[in-house]
Amino acid sequence: MDIVKGTTYVNDDEYAFNLAEVNLVAPNKEGGTGWHRFQIIALYRESHLCEYREDLGKSVDFKADQFRIMGGVVDGKKVYQEHTVNELREMADDMRWNKQAIDVKELFKVG
Image 1 (cartoon, helix red, strand yellow):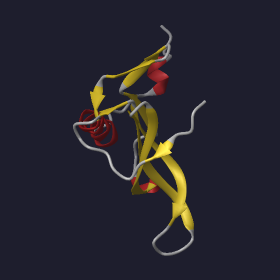
Image 2: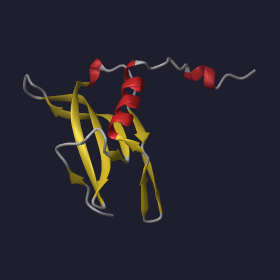
Image 3: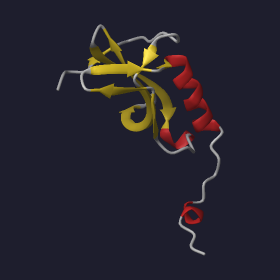
């Protein structure tokens, strides 16, 4: 397993491997720490997996569940990145703010 390199920037037209929005502990502006929602974008640059993280704010401000959107796949040693950073961010915006209510009970309804 290779080390994931950090990066301080991503370009909207750059191809990405995946985008995740997850809750992680981070420092609060008021002091101390708390749960924050992070957008994490993974992409390959020069055959190295890189990761960009952006703090979106306190996790209590987000109603949507944590999620991951795949933007590419690995086939053996070959990596295929099919979506750009911008495309994945647009999908994430839709999932985050336009979340359609899914009643889990309805998924398992019998009869």
